Picture 1 (cartoon, one colour):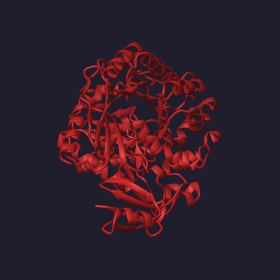
Picture 2 (picture 1 turned 180 degrees about the vertical axis):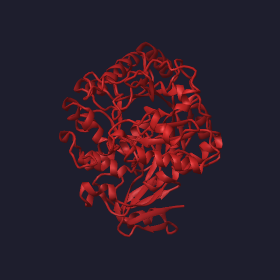
Picture 3 (picture 1 turned 135 degrees about the vertical axis):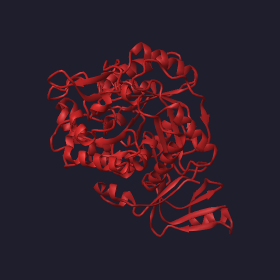
Picture 4 (picture 1 turned 120 degrees about the vertical axis):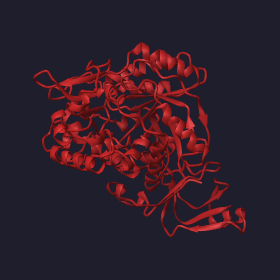
Length: 514
């Protein structure tokens, strides 16, 4: 059926360019321009949609959001994001355990020690006071650090940390219940896996939540084989409501061998063509690998991969036609990743373009190398807002002034895409991400790296066409141009007509994925 959208602010490329009307035919954009002209081309049977002055944009993309984990916090796992003290966390754990006596493990996620009144990490003894009778596993908001109660220690065959991970100890030399990076695998292998039915429920819940924010395309990075099978099943059943890129993980936590390469998959609603690696940890928890130490004796973070092991796996993946996405935040990790990518570029007959996830603290030379290699940057401006207090607390000024340097990334000619990495953060609203890239303010209104601000148009592009370029779908997605899918979002007001510090408050009236 032919449809024509009119009487609103229609921005086909998420820029200041505005057209009078948009014509959609067979789920794709057939034209844009004057209303009368499009009506004549579409014919009298075309259905008219009066936008009543609202703003129509291309649907937003989130090229790095843990979709099933967002859904897990909406359905199964206790959400601790926003807790302000350890007693509050304990109360919520107790209440959750009381409501779920049938669960063999109590699982929760979301605390951030920088936001706790005590200003410290919780430990095993804090969890023992809340959950003494069942194993309890509480993941920090970043998912690179977790705390367990004492019951978990009785299940562990060994406390020896694998390479690229840590088992932390208290001043008396006793394990305090805090595990980081690859050491999380010591715990997760003990937890019963989710059945396919639960994964399906999580994905369905997450899709609805993303559509409410105007997100019509998303990449789920670091997917295990059992979840990958669920995505395939849901696509075959027509249950995917947004366009999803599922990214298999190559080396899960705590495992020293790689998983086998999966089979690639390409359909309108599901793509599987990129594999995921982790080079280091998280910045807000001081496990990102840096060259200069964190403040307050925080060390230099954690390198998770041996370079030769990484290169060998990446070469095999690229030779099989897979693109590579690697988590690298600290400058030491970025060094490693770009050295591997440069080796990959020596024999890349397919011209595959790889990506770095997060890119927290690159040097100017890193950006020059990325431009030369055609490496994309997929980053999260919302981190500046929600995690900025951690950055100010842990980063020396040398790093703080150039953390997540979007102005420098664009000026260097590096392809930029924005995402949220939820549920690392609570707010995965793309418009709040746009506001954060433009304003660069933390929760308390402190400015971070003012010289790295970018414009509204640049930020919107990073959430639309820029993200589609990273996902490899820019020929059919990312803008409302002729021949592309008519994935769109309708906003109550135009972001071009409000102050940039109000973007995050704009309301989504409708998201459409035909």
